[in-house]
Length: 424
Ligand SMILES: Cc1cc2nc3c(=O)[nH]c(=O)nc-3n(C[C@H](O)[C@H](O)[C@H](O)COP(=O)(O)OP(=O)(O)OC[C@H]3O[C@@H](n4cnc5c(N)ncnc54)[C@H](O)[C@@H]3O)c2cc1C
Image (cartoon, rainbow, N blue to C red; front, side, top):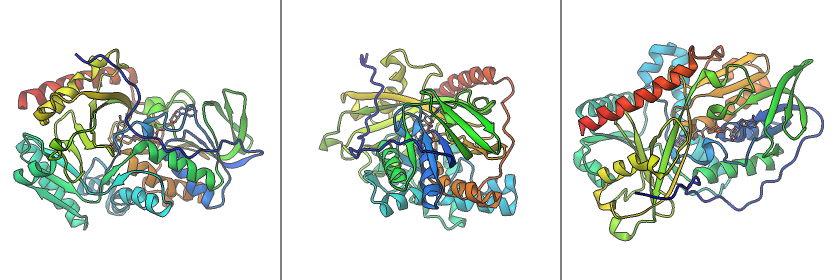
């Protein structure tokens, strides 16, 4: 029985200092929340000449951006044909083109701005454990190939060689994807955003947000106050009551992760080319190698905060099912964070009142999405033209009976886990 609960992720934080500053006078854009979304928007807005203030409740990387699995996967949960069916030809094509380029946005930024972020772009594997999952991979592969994407199907032998894992029938590889050190990415985004002129303060939550004439006024816990022409509430799964109905417009779930000790050379058959992998089970597990050679594996956790290391045991069981050879390798880190899920599993853009913007709902795939969204969001802040956005702006609505929805999700997870267990 494992004993330690370590809330700290395994990721290295760059040492470069991030200067903090509070802007004097009114600004064009106030951003609440310094994750990928807030910082990428701030970076692009500042580079286009806007004055920007970012306000963060904790340290940089306090939210999902500092604790995630670092798998940079393009696309959305929905495949291209589903998006066209849902949005129609023109809007669907725009969304497909945007979502196809989200991993490019991350890797291009790292290269162009010489970010100190460990990364490797060798693809993402969706590993199929059943015949149904294999058929889904065939469909996904067909649809993305039709869009010209660098994707391919994997047979049983290919996937065994690429993952070193037991029990897969085949799968799908998306070579546009890769892995990054997620904490370094958010830290470096903060660095370049401040170098571009963004004012940033940390450890000072925004506590109120209200209209002030034609501007917006944001007050913080420490008594600071700023007026802005527009506000981006970039708090996503960590949204509180700052904007009515925002936290209730989504369901957040916990994603838990474990990391082994760095693996010795005898384990080189595990992900020898460094791909990221997601399982096809109903309760997904995802895994990768870390820059220092550990195996990092994540998946759903309890809806409540963890009480002991036993709350990560289901992940240890998944690890040992996939890689029995790791059964004697100690788990060195355990941590968790929140993932924002929307009712339709799509990201949502809202502007409940003119100049008050927000984007939520990454369904656990927000690195590429939120980094890429920064540029169109910044353009929209400057232009006010919705055509600058890859997604329509939709009304902000609380999910009916939100509290019960969370209980329903917990019951669903337990049920899916049981079904996954029966399929083994
Ligand atoms: C464990 C885990 C694993 C994941 N793995 C992956 C993965 O491998 N690949 C992938 O693509 N995605 C993954 N995700 C999802 C991804 O991390 C998120 O989609 C993404 O980081 C969201 O970025 P964000 O900027 O929108 O939100 P966040 O990074 O959550 O930032 C929100 C910020 O708002 C701040 N905030 C909240 N309230 C206030 C306030 N009142 N005032 C000021 N600041 C406030 C918070 O402190 C936080 O820093 C994972 C998520 C988790 C939790």
